[in-house]
Length: 110
Image (cartoon, rainbow, N blue to C red):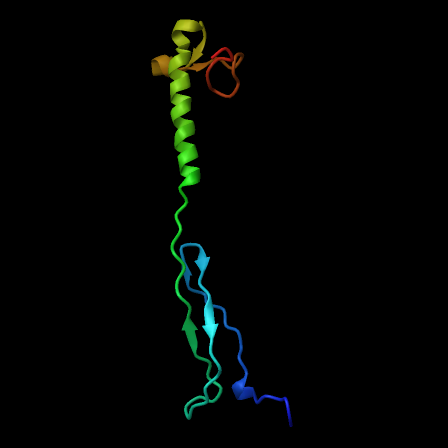
């Protein structure tokens, strides 16, 4: 019959379960090649690998935020400017009381 393909020449998609970091790499499916051992065997050929991408933007923001928090706590100087500080053992870097800042940070004025 015209237009029909035999089951041995059909191409079936196959999921590649190998992962490289958090990516699934694509696989190119070849036409089935009949052989004496296994008729209708599907051979896979890998495409070129993607360049491994490393995120640098988010870690940069995190480091910048931690740095700014440390500078702000240094400028705040709770033991000198306030009578009630939390974690006085930290000295200049101690936190304001919960009445002033309930999120453990500097005073509202700072």
